[in-house]
Length: 342
Image 1 (spheres, rainbow, N blue to C red):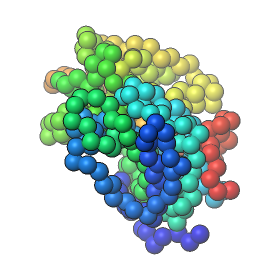
Image 2: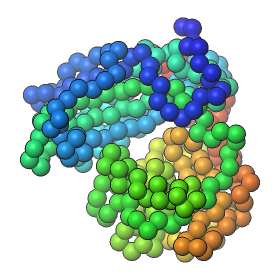
Image 3: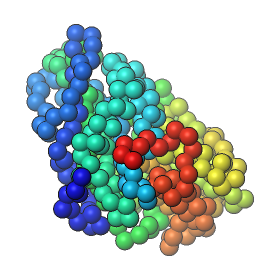
Image 4: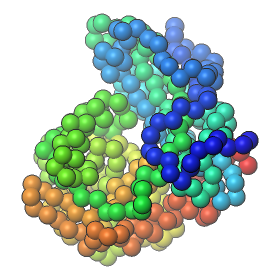
């Protein structure tokens, strides 16, 4: 299929409408067969549950063109499982995991002309999401739902190369103990908007959220998990019931252990420990790893030894290895790569 006439190498990280998306509706206790459609607009009641009570969940993932020219998706089964967990927590019907993967594949196949070529730095971003669609005025779960998947080509998260970030310790809480911080609910991101706007106004790139109960332990940012490297080369990530189980973070920990031979540890990370780490990164779908060079706690600066000019040594190895797997330059573990087009 001939590619669209897009300036791939100068593509931003934003929405571009593509030709097809997948839609399935839940009504009378069951999901319909689902279909691809050219209609990008959603029409619903002004009293739809999603508009009144934010009953919505989503996922984010990417399709890539590999070095060999294959179109692949990275670990969509884990996105399917995480969305199922999110649905259960918000009293929504689970969209079957095998149908989730099939729907994502169908959307990529239908929009192959929008999958950026290898070497462009761009990818096809995929957004599966679900919401309560029928009118609900009393506080209760919806009876009807819509599951959708759309695709949009996006450029690299970093324009002009990777530059270490400066982040601040937030005065706001991202998630409460026993709350919804461990699922990918839209309401979690709405909660973080004021905090990130405030951080940007004050000259910071992102927030570091501490645990809401004691404000002594590191949790995550508004949209990424933390990854730390100790001075003796151990890779450490925070453990908490109120942070999102990042697929990228889990993959990086496997890469650290199985490909790089590093010791890895998932545990509670106390804020007081940060000054003793050698490297810090934020991991997620968009950028894989965003290096952190400086953390500011109400005027007190903690400067990571890795510095403000480039990724730390181990962070760079993790980044290069995982992106190498995604792009087909390095052999992937079994089940990590879903081939859409050979």
